[in-house]
Every structure is written in C-alpha cells, then in structure tokens.
Length: 116
Image (cartoon, rainbow, N blue to C red; front, side):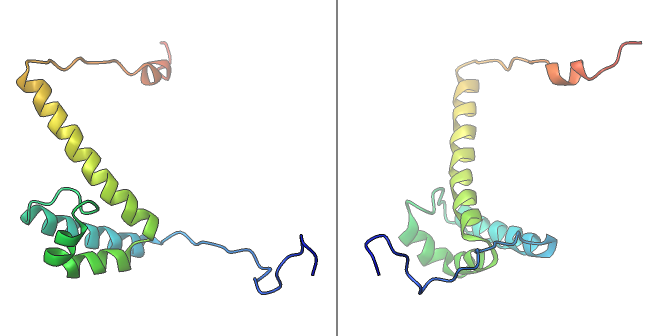
C-alpha cells in the first residue's frame, strides 16, 4: 500500500446515528432528574468538577443517567445545570443590588400581527 493509501480494516458503510424516540427521551429525562435531585440533596452543583464526590454519593443515579441518555446529552445537561445555577445566582445578586427588570417588547411577535 502506498503512502496515501487507505486502510481496508474500516467499514465502508457510513455510520448513522438515530435520534432517541419519545420513550427513550422520557427515560433519559427521568434519569437526569433523579441524578440532579441526588446532587441537590448533597449540595453538589457541578458534577464534572466534583466528579469524585458525585460518584461517591450519587453513583447509582449517575450510572443510570449515563446509561439512559446519549453521551452528548449527558454532557449538555451537566453543563446546563451549572450555567442555570450561575445565571440564577447572578440574577439574585442583581436584585439584591436594586436592579430592576426591564420589559422588552417582542418585535417578531408584533410584526406578525396583521393590521385591521
């Protein structure tokens, strides 16, 4: 085989990924919720940074979560949990400083209203 030859050990068929169906998604969300409830009970926000502690106290829930959900979803949900916590903490801090919420009209919704 030449320098730029291809290996014959790999399959020539394209790898296809099938999206989870409704019942698979429901199982994933249930497992995620159970895992996150366990994290909440044990005051763990970031299960990635506190991986050792999370596996120690919520090992069973974590295993089920990783089994029921696609790996990319597990990563997404774990990151989203931390992001939402940080967002909520920032909002509480702003409210404590006296910040007020500003209502912003939805220009897209207004554009869709037909004149009479």
